[in-house]
Length: 193
Image 1 (tube, rainbow, N blue to C red):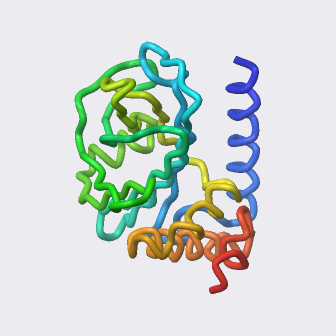
Image 2: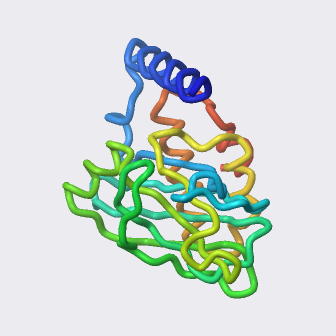
């Protein structure tokens, strides 16, 4: 509960700060969402030492979503994007594709206006299935958070495994540049653009 309050405080503070500085998503056609997947987010919770890092970017002009998930400690068999609120279970809406021989899962899909609204409302989640937990071993709710430095580093590490990851890094760089050069993650320096 305390972490949720602290997270909400910082998001609100950053939103006010960006608004006061003239920043915001209006300056870029792209927006970013991210999450960390864990067993405790699965409904009901699953005891798992595995985790995942997910980044989604949306091109608002083209109404397309790109998403990547990198898993660790999970013998992943499937990954899905669901439209559902925190604490609920919803049927899979979209399936990720695994990059063969890697722990990277990717997704590129068009979105409708109601789906984009649901994403903004925090009503999209990602889950990853395994033989140990066929109903889902790790899960994370996609939220309107710019990816952390660690998540950007993960994307940089897997960028050569998929053109989609490379495109996401370009979109993240464009978002940061639209924010008047605010380097939330250092993606411009890390990626070498």
